[in-house]
Image 1 (cartoon, rainbow, N blue to C red):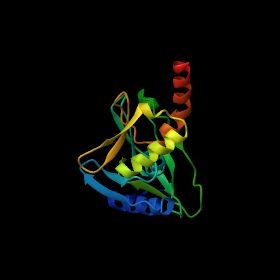
Image 2 (spheres, rainbow, N blue to C red):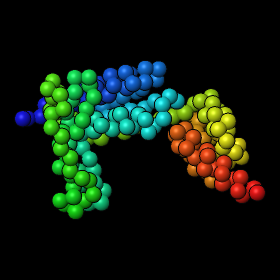
Image 3 (cartoon, one colour):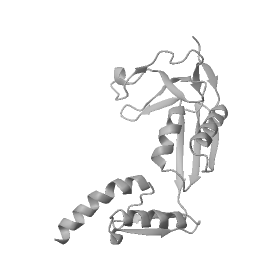
Image 4 (cartoon, helix red, strand yellow):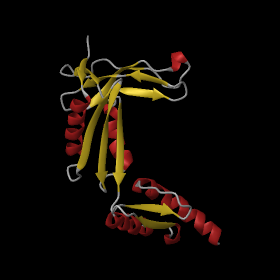
Length: 193
């Protein structure tokens, strides 16, 4: 069975529809780019869902994988299901070439799905945070027990913001901080005892 090729622009359309369905209140910018040897899709948004949530959805639309340990790119075929979601149909992996990507294969999960090859080898995401949203995140984390003195809001010239630790590391993913709140709270309680 031959895979139906979907260009980077067609892949971007599928991603837009999926994001609108999963995150209806967030406005995303989804742009495709084609170049010799492949293509990519860039997804950008402000505030809204954490980057890890969006990446878990849009990453499945990437038509390629890259194994940096052996400097090798491979192509992956997908099953495009009737609802617009995708599943890996075949991924040759790189372990036979001394890489670390495991091979995958799944038989047709639905009789109405199509075998596709995405023109966008990679899907990149970029989330920005507004100062108002950063303040909401800070207040929520402090309510959950994270000490106020280890975080601060970094307001940037372009109108965006970030949350910075006292070590100067920028973490825009609120879910990361929610998980860390109990760890940090325990560490500071022990240190202050």
